[in-house]
Amino acid sequence: MQSSGHRLRDVEQHQPLLSGGEEEVAASRVWFIQDSCGMVCAFITWFLVMYAEFVVNFVMLLPSKSFWYSLINGVAFNFLAVLALTSHLRTMLTDPGAVPKGNATKEYMESLQLKPGEVIYKCPKCCSIKPERAHHCSICKRCIRKMDHHCPWVNNCVGENNQRFFVLFTMYIASISLHALCLSGFHFFTCVRVQWNECSDFSPPVAVLLMIFLCLEALLFLTFTAVMFGTQIHSICNDETEIERLKNEKPTWERRVRWDGMRAVFGGSPSLLWFNPFAGLRFRVLMVGARKNGAEFSV
Image 1 (cartoon, rainbow, N blue to C red):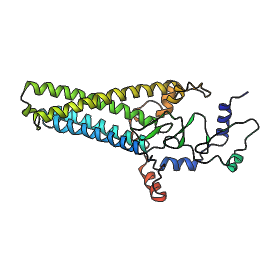
Image 2: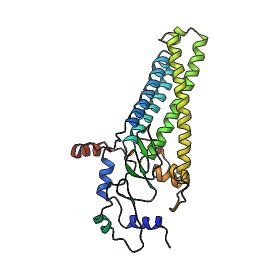
Image 3: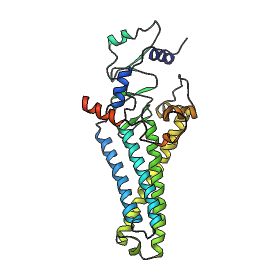
Image 4: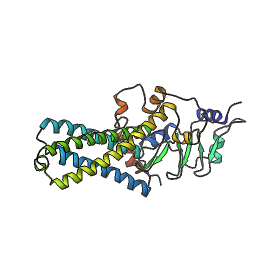
């Protein structure tokens, strides 16, 4: 006898919950969660990255007497910062895998042409047919496919469609945090050996305070994002979301572990595209969709 999870998977294969046209609309629409806490956290994230940019560029690199030192570190740090902020935007503005709201109608249920014994689940909160491994998010007010968790720092759920960008976000934030710590340490010891006025355009007290705050921020971000990055990679390689792990749910699906799980999340064989948050971004489709339908927000 088939389990309910297998029966639900058979129904989805027989008639998908999203048609091809609906999938294209979902991919092209602008997704944004109007949550005050999430928007404040997202703003704080951008503010702290911009603060790090200011201190690294104007306090440490530009006043440096070594042109190549400033150029190489400046290009590397700013390039990683752009990738981090782009990954943050892609995570925040990408539909994480929301199930169509209110599709559990009598007419739609009849159109599925269910066979005797076939089971599907209905979410009582958003009145939608709940696919396997989907969970309801009380903040997004939607059922999300392969929901891992809701992250206020990206003001969105981490789910089937945007987990890749969240992993890149944590990786690049950890990278620039480590880079900032190394630059701060080198700059501090360099300035101790000479006059502070010669290695910074700011007064010594101001420069020291700016660097101390940067080090505290970088250390906090490095610890948090490194742990999150490791947790996400572990979840992907075991094909198990954080919610499934916490609820100790037994898998009723065919697990894709290790490289199969990585390919499923990042797409295709290992390549540099895995590290590119711009990959798959269709500006023309987004502009046309916004012009025709207006920006679509999730409330």
